[in-house]
Amino acid sequence: MSLTSQDIDRIANLARLELQPEEGQRMLDQINGFFSIVQAMRAVDTSGVQPLPHPIATIQEVALRLRDDLASEPNQREANQQSAPAVERGLFLVPKVIE
Image: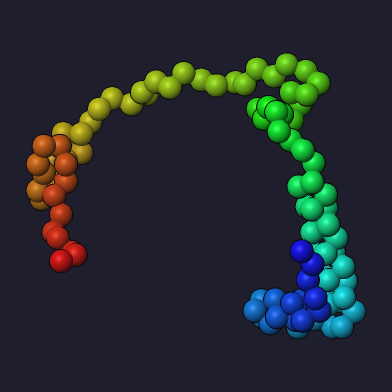
């Protein structure tokens, strides 16, 4: 995929940018350069390659620092719902807004 100068002009118009011709050409070259890098990356066969949890995992073992998923606050549902105008089975009741 590559863009044309008309594509750059349209994008600049949509972004409300006023580009000089040399700026538009520079943008065209940079964006098309980016697209060529993406095409080269897509051409690489990655079947059978396991995803890495972290980029550094290719050269050393990485232990992810994950904490246990424990509740740190007590359940205060009843106290929080005391000021509600209507509650049913632990849920706030609100007026119907969609018919």
